[in-house]
Every structure is written in C-alpha cells, then in structure tokens.
Image: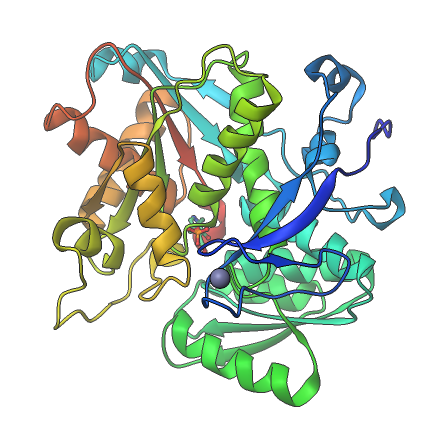
Length: 387
Ligand SMILES: Cc1ncc(COP(=O)(O)O)c(C=O)c1O
Ligand SMILES: [Zn+2]
C-alpha cells in the first residue's frame, strides 16, 4: 500500500443531528443523549485540494483529512474502499436511462460495504483506548467488525439473528469473534447488546449509536464523486436497513460542496429501497407513520430486516432534502433481479444490491426516473456470502 496519507485529520467536533449541541471529539462518544439522535462529525478545513489525492493510497484512507482519526499509526486497514464503478451499457439501453452505474461494494474485504464503516470505527476505537467491542447485526457488520477487531488486537462480540446466513456466522468465528445467536431480529439482538455492554463495559458499535461507522460509510460518496470525475449522478439507489450508507453519502456530498470539489453543486435524488417483508421507512414516507399492525418477517436480503432504525429521522431528512423517494420490493423481485444482472452484465449482486436494482426498475416503470437521468445503484455486498 502507498502510505502517503498527509493531512491526517481536520475533524473538529461532534454535534447532535437534531439540535446541534456539540460533543467533545477527544473523548469516547456514543450518540447525542440530548435528543436521542445520532452524532455527526464536523471538520475544519480550508486549503485542501483534490489534486492531493493523486498520491494517496487506493483505499478509503485516501480521504483521511475528512475522516476522524488523528494519528496515522492507529489506522486499521484491510484495503477497504476504492471499489469498482461499473457502467452498464446493456442495462442503460434496456431501461432507457442516460447512464447506469453499479458501485460494486462486494469487492470490499469481508465482502460487503460494512468494511468501510468498521475500518474507520475500529481504528477510532483503538485510538480512544477501547479494548472490547460488541455489535448487534444482521450479519455483514458482524463479520467486518470481527475482522477489524482481530487486526487491531481488540476483542469482538457479535450478536446475530439465528436466521442469518451460516457462512457469515462461520466468518465471525473464523476471525476469532465471539458469536451469540438470537431467536429474533436485529432489534432483539440490540437489547442483548445493551445488557452485555452494561455488564462488561464493552463498547456498543450499534448502527448510528456511535459516530464513526457513518464516517467510514460516507467515503462511498467521496468515491462515487471521484470516479465520476466530480460530477454526481442524478439518482442514487440505496438498499436501506439502518441507513448509514444513505446518510453517509449525503454528508459526503455536503462536505464535497463545501470543499468546492464538485463540478456542479446539484446533488442526486436519493432513493431508498426496502423489502416488502420489512419496510418501515417506506411506510413512514407514504403515511408519515408506521402501520399499526407492522410485523417484520425474514428476507433473503437480511441486511434490510431492520424494523426500527435508530436514525429514522435523519433518513427521512435525506429523502426530503434530496427530493428523493422510497420503494419496496418483493422476494421474487430480488431473485429475478439477481438473475437478470448476472445474465446481462456478468455481475452477481447481493440480495440487497438486487433489491436496489429491482427498485430502480419499478421507478423507471413509474417514470419517476426519467430518460435524461444518470443513475447509480449500490451493490452493498457479495452474492457469495449468502450460500
Ligand atoms: C449487504 C447489506 N446491504 C445493505 C445493508 C443495510 O445497510 P444500512 O443498515 O447501513 O442501511 C446491510 C446491513 O446489514 C447489508 O449487510
Ligand atoms: Zn440534541
């Protein structure tokens, strides 16, 4: 790896996503207890030129100046990020859109985009002297956390639904993580995590309940911009569970605007795709509240089975601010979309990525996505992890 990494960090303070109350970035923080909302990291940078990126490593740490780590020695990296951006010539023709891209996160270490968030969060945990991390997960985040904890020399405890893919459970244990299986969904795992964390002092890495997984995920937005020569697509379609990638990309676009790195300041319309078996955010977008009889059920896209996202409010803000929307898809839409992408473009999507592709097709059909628009769908993981 090329280790130039200049400008290690311009991170300045943390602030509540709701009221803006500031929190000290030099200390361990979780979420904004003032409003029970996530904490966002703010940077103080004036003279950072994108030309400096040329010499930086081809992984997400190339954006270290806009990441929260203060000391280069604390970086825990398995070469995450800088994933391929495929242009899909046949698909863009078939669905009559201007440009169609897939950002392929399946090539990340541990086979999903969770590596981004956990590389940054575990690096920061190391920097803050944390020795034991615990996480509730649908699967992939647990695999990623175990790998990065091992690399960093920290203890990992992973609490996962029994119904998650066996391969991901095996992965956690192979990396030396402690695995606890739960009869239920991610929110049931979350309750167990809170109890173990209170009993043992383990640091809770739950989605959006600590500030730095978001910072890792935002690099997805930096890369999309850089790989498209600083011209953002018109639409981004993201398969949403807890929403970290969505909120992270939106944060990245705001930062890029402030850095004056974008050719045009027009930001993409952000689309969230959920599954019919667990679609709380789609219900919120449609009706302003969740259905009274909402009951989640299992999906092959198990990363999307998140019935109560902690960052619900921030997810809805991104949709509103970006003039975006949300759509849900069925299990058969997902399997059909995996086959279609494999046969037309030679790409295997994870079920979650295939959900995004299925959502895209529905929005083209509804004419919500139009012919002149460029679209990027996020394939958040590798198909090979689900078998
Ligand atoms: C492959 C995959 N895609 C999407 C998601 C949803 O990500 P987020 O919770 O950040 O919205 C997950 C989460 O587990 C996942 O593993
Ligand atoms: Zn607050």
